[in-house]
Image (cartoon, rainbow, N blue to C red; front, side, top):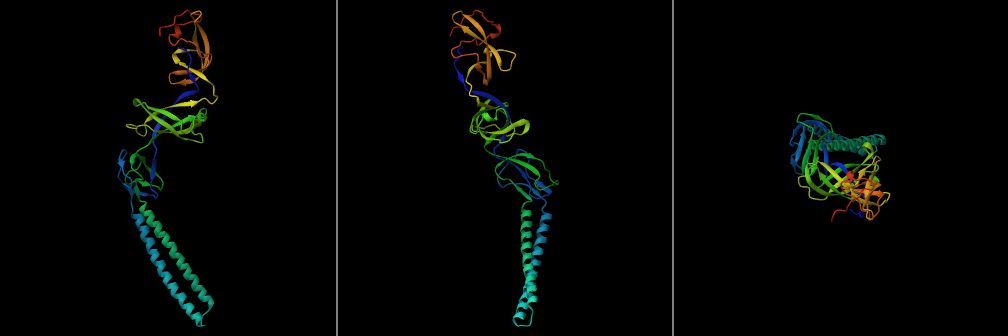
Length: 325
């Protein structure tokens, strides 16, 4: 082959996991004993569908008690209002004292404040009662379940996971040595080991600002192609064409044209000399690969003719004949 194809990028493959773009951990906002669970893993649900219910009796009793306290508080306001009105009337007739009138006013205002407190408790009890029912936030599938009837759960404890129907993404981790070479919007090709020959186009949608496990940055790849038969939880292999941060030009040559050497990124290519019809064993240096092509940055120039097969049978200075086109 003749060396001519210039390369400024490097192809890298990363393993990832398919996730629903919209996925939620569901939990009750109040604690209690689980009365019923209406769904299981894999079930399709509709927005607003009842997924699970807690025992409502403790919360109904709290509401009843709060409402009774509110009635009592309102009755105290009526009594204190009558007492205050009497003190005002007596004071205006010149037979009472201002201190008694002020004291009656204080008790009336305190009673009115207590009504406000009890009204807030009633509203909170009503809200807690409604939170004993867990609803689906959107159409989707139940991806995970960790609760059974008659179990005691705490407020905020994850009991279900729902994946929305629709868009999918791939979550992967990019090493710190490569994170500066990608950007949001960069295109990607995604393949799936369980779907041989199937590939989907993707695009980087998010890049994490902080490294997590093993000094790698979390990255999300949004799938933009057809996602038939692709489900959350599947393993994916993402191929990215990464820019060379050093802007070093190289040439793409077939990987099988390289005879390995001891050093990392080093090898040998056999360059054809048309004047002597011999090959010259030439040391080269590579800077990654692009699919089945090696990117060579040192040792070759445009126009060089190199052996692309059988290099293990060649030797420096060996006479050869070019194969027919």
